[in-house]
Length: 235
Image 1 (cartoon, helix red, strand yellow):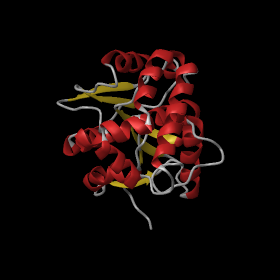
Image 2: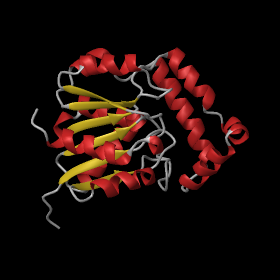
Image 3: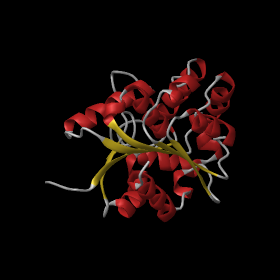
Image 4: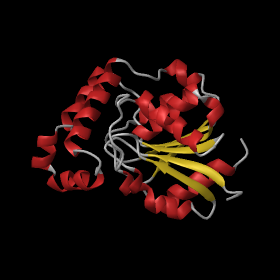
């Protein structure tokens, strides 16, 4: 079916799934051809034999675009999804339209990775936040949610040892980008976000008021407004 709507792809975060984007997709569907996918091992998609990494997830995005004959797409990436989007913009700029990230952690080193990995313990999650454990169980229907948690911990540990995107990489991204973060995000720092913002040749910075890290905490109408504004304005 022919459409004159702008194509936009949503990329979910670590431990997340495309289903989390339903409110945002509804808010943007009148103006955009909305695309969503689950990275392998998430939601209803089994783990890939290729591995569980940013590079694998990026390859899955490229495969998705090819299967739907999308030569170009705007991307909204939440948290880890934003990191995948930036990796694509760095290495496959011909495929990416404008990039919008929300709550994406950019500064990965051994110290920051170690801090996050400590939280990614299935037994600890079951004990301390049983409600979240139930959410993860319901969200990841293709496999065991505990395996998703453990493999995410391994992915973050690897990022801590070998960050895939350094300041020089961001300086080489020619795609227009908008970095968004919540003013109450306790995982992502202003400093690391501003450093990447300053390194990017074509970038905007947006602070979401009264907003913590979880996607569900974001003001959907406000988020939709900023996405529409950025993807349609002249730069």
